[in-house]
Length: 59
Image (cartoon, rainbow, N blue to C red):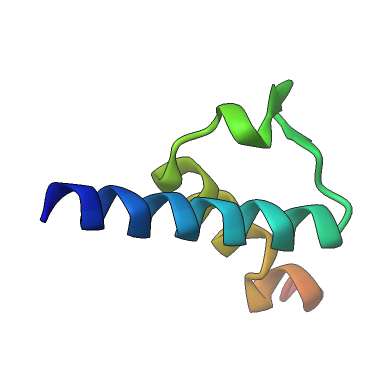
């Protein structure tokens, strides 16, 4: 069971890393993507894909 969970986490990390690289992100806060945890990658991915980021701020 633990091995299956570890494999799923690693696959998700790699997917996020691949997606971030496709968006032109190679480092975050001077840290390479492969050095980051799954939680850190998920958080950064959400920030980058936030709909608020694409819309101008309200006055």
